[in-house]
Length: 385
Image (cartoon, rainbow, N blue to C red):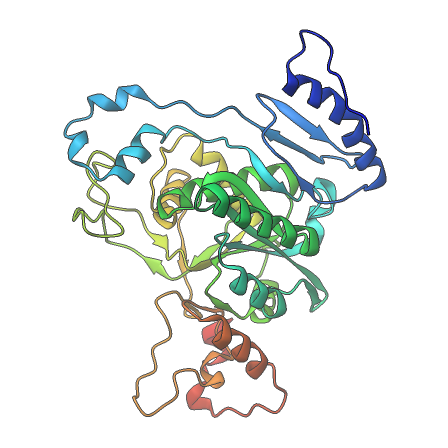
């Protein structure tokens, strides 16, 4: 038995960092290309591996904007709105889990045809596992690659937060598909999580052709998506594309009891630009880059799908509606028909709000070569493509 003695006058934390640095370096030499688990190491710090662009930065905690105290009737607003206003300017947070080589590095990222970007929370393990086995499975389809990342923050506090972070770390080590930032994974932080992802994409996957951006409770027919995107004329991802279920001619909800409450202290305008429902939408790599660049000069709004529409509008662009995207659910006009009949879902692109068990079953049913569907239960090809 022996113990380390730290040099006199050196703080314990600094001594441990000095001791750990060569060990960390040896680990990277033995594990080239591994996914990276990172803890906050201070301002402008970075960890490098032998792979190109394989780095993670972390930043000091963002400070509260005290001038917010001068906003009229601030104290009458719910606490979550007050917190949002105090920290609205914060755009950079430490990464806890990173995938710097997910797309093969920036230079090879054009080889990824469709990147599935799935918003998730640490507790939603069952949803992630089902998606990995169904529509979000990484694969080669129709000659092009589909890749997958889950984007997450942190949940809960204390020991439970530690357990959930460990859960994501274990999944990350097994599947190499999780990006996690040290932010609370709350509804009002969805926009921030979205922008942190786009910043990550600019650094690591700048030439990805197309993206599906969606929730972890959607049913997505990603095979149909690939075929639809391949059918586009004169757009290989280098031109504007943003399609989904378009919502327009609406504005902020001012009732404080609503989940979507936006007071005038957050946004004075009574109208929103057109946007796609946040359950799921398709966009080109070009448009993702435009949104990220516009976001640098557009104040954050806690409704993430609306915020994407605001960034598009600032660039003079807009969304396009697609009949195959059903973020409000799939309407079946009969009480005697099974609303989960696979024939209703065989030709759609995306439907929101699925339980994991229903989603798992539906994926296998629509891919059953023996499935027979009448024309009444199917969308016509011209409605999808």
